[in-house]
Image (cartoon, rainbow, N blue to C red; front, side, top):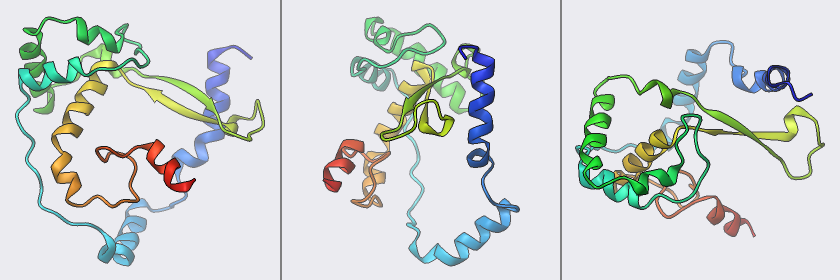
Length: 178
């Protein structure tokens, strides 16, 4: 089928087991997990986030690389075209959002691309990995905040971690496996 509603229904039903999880009582499951593994959990001081500045925004926008556009009509590379004076307005907007203001409506929508898993059976719903593509502004904000937390993350990150750790990604994980 090419009907988006039918495709959504097939995928939703197939992934429902994963989305719902297998815990009857989530709070009890979390408590049991913490009781069993608390000694293995990293603990560190909370890191206050730095104020969002025009400089942070501008530098981040200039470092933007090509990636998929969002449903809001923005292409990530559009940020490179903005004048430097835009940094202040965007920083102010992001500070308001971090203070509790809602994200602009156009940034609240995402699209999903389904990537076929290696060795999977074509056409089977579980043969595809859903990749959620958020609005470019949201992705730039996440990049700014992750970048500002690099030194804090380095204090507790393990070599086995390959997501959310500066200078470590999926390619690094694949390299270690090979």
